[in-house]
Amino acid sequence: MPVPSNILTQVQTYNKSNLALLQNMHCFVATANKMYQNFQNLPANLGATVTFDAPPRFTTVNSLVASFEAAEQRINSLTVDQEVSTSYAFTAQNFIFNVEDYMEKFGRSAIAEIGAKIEEHVSSKILNHTYRFYGDGTSSINSYQQLATALAYFRTYGAVANVEAEAYLPDIAVPTIIGSGLSQFVIDRNEDIAMSWELGKFSNCKWYQTNRLPVHISGNIGNAAAAADRTLTVVSTNDPTGANITQIVCTTTDTTDANAIFENDLGAFVDGVSNRTNVRYLTWIGHSYSSAPCQIRITASAASSGGNVTINIFPGLSSVPGKNQNINTNIVAGMKIILQPSHRRGLITAGKPLYLAMPQLPQQVPYPTSNEIDPATGCSMRLTYGSVFGQNTMGNIHDAIYGATLVDEYAMAMLFPL
Image 1 (cartoon, rainbow, N blue to C red):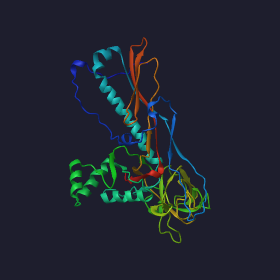
Image 2: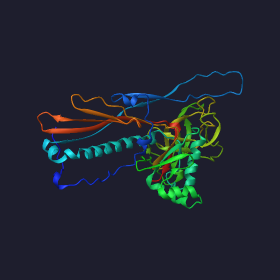
Image 3: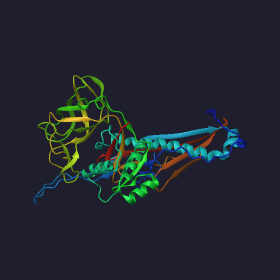
Image 4: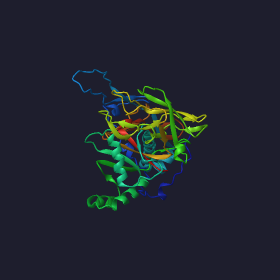
């Protein structure tokens, strides 16, 4: 392994400046649920899996006569499928005369780079694990009233009782929201936000700001200028009975287009369509008619052809009574779905549904290896160092393996303009 062309400075000619790293805002890694029974403390390899359960679902009948239904354990899996490393090497002369006393700074910078990669992956789970959303991706979300409205829509579907929600906003949106709050006559809260210029806690939700929210680029239908061109009209579904609709055939004004719809595009059923019932989600528990609009995530890219396009959707929609019923009416021809334009996607969660696993890596025999585990967060990282025999090369490798997931029904996206 040849040593790269390092850019080093003789030790006599520089002073340690103590300049801080230009860190990103790693709120996702910091707040993700990383605590599993011993998983983070045990050596593991790429592909290791940990499972966790979700509450079972049932229905209730208005009778003392039992109506037995199958009990189903709902299990989610989190697979450690990501790997990341940062490495650097020196000659013996480099090490002795230039960097022996500088290794801590090299290590800190390497770990910061790894942290940025992990944060990017964790935040990307917002794109393929949210289907409900607030905002249209065009109009700004810039006031406390809008934040309160977003929380109301999040909670009307089903709220985690007595648990503080967590929300993640783009850092550049926060000053305008705070400015809107300072114009309101709320003395104590305004004193807090004026002193810190941070949102902090509001409406039993902790608000985080980050510069690492993922961007979703929508297909051409979602990015059409006119609302009519962003609207699909339902022709048929894969299940006319309405028991489990996962695919919908629609017409579109975008007649033939290979880039009509992209994976993870978001859509919402349109209200006020003539002779069609407005589609609403039922509450997650109790299956009662709610104020939550029926919104969906498209799970695969799709081309339009001859004015038709077929979309695969999540979640599956069911109007048939039972534990999986989630909408108030069947999806029928003539209903309309409007797609959302490209946007930056924020997040609201409750109940710690964003999971991150970072188990230990095994020892790199015969090289000296150190595994550091943070017991408070469950994060684990490995450092391996050693020499290449006879090559005058001393190398250091910082690496980690990890995986992340987000439980869809406990999350809602917030769409911010690009």
